[in-house]
Length: 410
Image 1 (cartoon, rainbow, N blue to C red):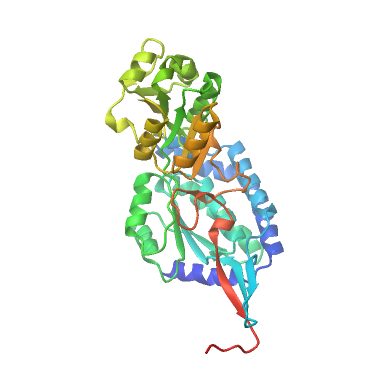
Image 2: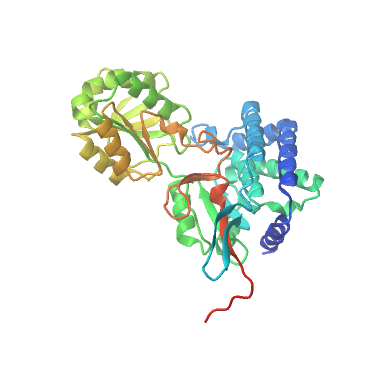
């Protein structure tokens, strides 16, 4: 428990750290990330060499000079954001003269469990640090070398700034440290899992620390009978192929039966990326002979997060069936309708229960940076405390400050 105790002490020390000091340290970190590009790439190459060439997580794991530059830019973006700490959310005075102030404050210690995403190490630390919390990081074993290289850069930056390096702690590989983190309710205030549905379910089912569920994305795009084919083609291709291994990637295209003839035109660009389509019988007939990577769908191919160059297609009679299908098969992450009919758009956005509901926009935009939040700590698919892309405001809590002049209660 020594690491957890160190994190708790670090969280207390951060309470007195001025915002200017936090921002300057983040700017130094961004510069140090760029300077450490060779070391980060070398460590990442070792991780990549251990991963199967056919594993769809390779894209998430891989670092490039451009991606490292993006990470540094994200850290700078967080430094430029207003501090979420010490903000007066609400203030009022009671009839007895007692003043009540609702004030934003840090959580304290935030634990994040994540899979093969080495950029998360930097993103999570930057957000937690800016929000005044210590970060306990538990990365996946696939990225162990990269995560160790990343934490060295972070902790060296903190030490150079005269700040306790225990504001960022990378827990050891292995299940034992995960189990200890999930039990550490005396030291850890919040746990955020980022990764597959299996990981999220495991953390939720076994944690004694409060959890915000994030990550698992079974995302649909619904082509309504009023939809424009060119718009659908561009959105479907972007949502599916931009980065197949991320949680906002398209998993299933839902099509009104009256528009099945549009499928060949809507899907042909997908073939240029080698996307395999698993279609129900009606959609299969519409694409048969017109699409090269076509397969008959099974029931298991719906409600599935592919994380690969694969997607399913389901046929529905109308918007009622589309909403019902998404309700049964979605994960409350990101859903889209392609339509020109305003009533259909309003109905879809009202009735679909998801953190982000799009109209004629690719689901690839479900991202803290794209929402203008700087970096993100994850995409929450639950409804308590936070929902959707979580950034600085979502990783703070609040307390009430009550001031008076000797009031007592009768």
